[in-house]
Image 1 (spheres, helix red, strand yellow):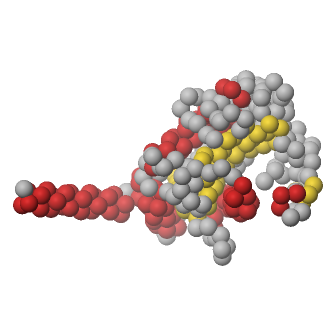
Image 2: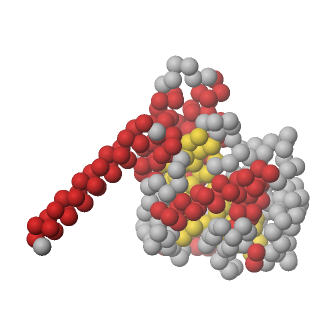
Image 3: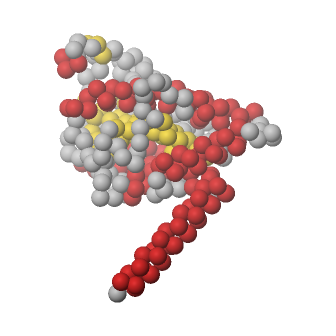
Length: 307
């Protein structure tokens, strides 16, 4: 039995080494595949996507459009001293491009927030600003962490998720991109659930403008759940009430800024801020916050002034 046990352990070690070697070969020879594959640990995806980014920027035949896209991603990974590490968890340079950068470690965070952008947001145009916005949100969440109910793990992570093609003036009237984006968002959250099986974090979705339509479509699909949903400047969706969303009871929040013509319009269906929807409408009038030593919340004005 002792000899059999030694042989079994030796076989296991050999299999494990072979599996690690196979993983390393995939990482070296197919980084674009590994970096965008849901269910792969995020630290590994970060390594793969950074390799893709580095090789892309070094390409002698790199065109101007692709150079601008990759330059935005490169600049998005620059972090300030004292801020959490940034992870490049998705990078796809095809078409208008897709990317996602996590502020903090998704493999271990107790609290995960995915920020979903709205119309006109592109990797080439806004990835750096969008990531810095996610970083600001991460800083604010860190100050409130002692008051929050969190999941398993430690710390928080905020994802600047540019994971779908957002509309422009040529296709803003259609819900097609929202449906495609919803499917991508569902896969993103499903990947997180798989990685954190048995150790689930608290999952929050923060969605702006057309991104709120995308997020509500995902959360009404039956394929995705979240602990909280916050929508800002929403043009609505075909979801009738908060009860139709796979979100914890009482955890749907809606904000409409002063002079925002999109918020409350119900352009794509039901306004989530309406009385019959069943959400909590945020007070965005501004003023001092009694819980944070008199810090002042500035009143947002217009459609792009929320975060």
